[in-house]
Length: 252
Image 1 (tube, rainbow, N blue to C red):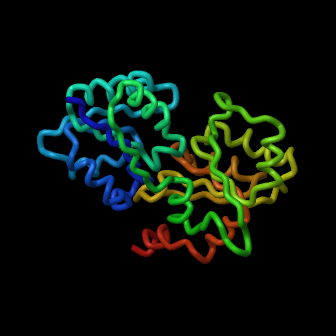
Image 2: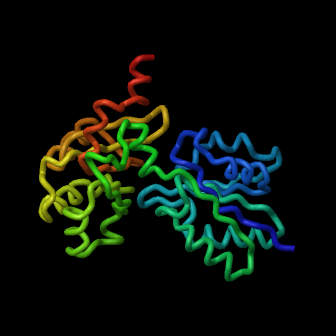
C-alpha cells in the first residue's frame, strides 16, 4: 500500500507562522524531509519515532540534489509511509514543488500541497513594510535573484523597472549589484528606496535600507548575507512609521 506525501510550506522563519494544516501534517508524519529554511523548532510537533532527513541547500553546496530529493520522497511513500516535506516559505514560490509533485504523480503516489506564508511578503511585514500601499504601490512582483541560472530578457527588465511598483527579489544577495544596475539602466530612478531583510521574521532579523544607488555599499558595510529578501519600491519609506518588530528588540 502506498503512502502519501505532504508538501508543506513551513513559513518564513518564525515557527508560530506555520499553518494549522501544516502542523497537522508534521504530527502525522512517519518521515520528515526538511530544508535549511524550515525552522527546526517545528520538529517538536512530530511523533517520537518519526524519521528526520535534512536536505538543506546552500549556494554551491547541496546536501541532496533535487533529483535525489524527488526520488527519496517517492521511495518513502512507496514503502507505505506518511512523508511530510517541509519547505521554507511557500512551496509554490521558488520551492520547486512542481518538480517534486510531478515525480510523485508519475509514480502514482498521492500528495497534497499545503501553502505557507512566503518570505517575500512576511519579511517585509516584519520589517515594517507592506508590499502594497494605496499611496505608494498598487502592483507587486516576486522575482528570483538567481540571475545566472535564470536570466531575464531586456524586455522583462524594462517591465520590472517601469511597470511594477514593488519588487521582492529572492535569493539575490550575490547579484545585488547587478539587480540595482539593471533596474537603473532600464529606467528606475537611482533614488528608488530599497530594503534588504536578512533572516526575516526570526530573532536574527536585520534590515538595511538605502536606494538603488547606495544599497550595495550599505549591505556590504553591515555584512548582510543570505537568506535575505531584497525589496525595491516606494513602500520601503513606510518603514519609518511601521517598524514594529525590530523596534521591540531595541526596546527590550
